[in-house]
Image (cartoon, rainbow, N blue to C red; front, side, top):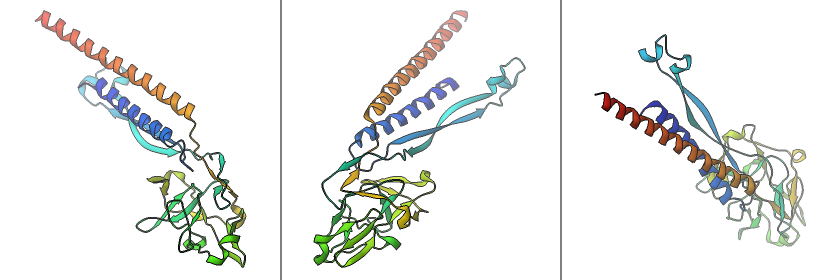
Length: 253
């Protein structure tokens, strides 16, 4: 396989990555709190120090070859739209940050999906039953006699008829590149900091929808298909050129 084929192969692998990301975005367009991902690529330049590439008659750009490398994916931090649910406990973070939850198997995970439920033990949990953590990383427990008067303030304060029961923690990360999906609407990250009450703004009565725009993702998939078809055409042209060269050499022989 010659260099041109390797370059095309790296391009096609990048297109496959773009397609996987776009397909995942579309699949999660109705997932609460989901943030669309964007693939990130970088150029890898290989230097050719062979005698042929270093010959005085060789073009100046013949000594380097550019490939495409997958550099990972970043999520779009734009907020999704507010979707009313009819439940006074459901909430949406109005701004940056994540709800901290006790992750399965230990540790802390993060989510933007603001479905709030109350477990049989009286703890505030996500729709999947994971405890929602308050300030300092502790779960918030609601006594049974205060369930009917429970409310959540715009700063995350959880209040019952006898007063404050705790405050839901909102955690932000200075570098969003370190926040990565771990499945089930949860994110894995380290190095976050809790926002104070004055820095936190929550909207209750609904949740944040996905920020995926179906038309944008569908258009991206069409562009990917066209780019792949162009790459395949170039690959076929290179193969035809190679075949013609072999035929001419055979006739000279």
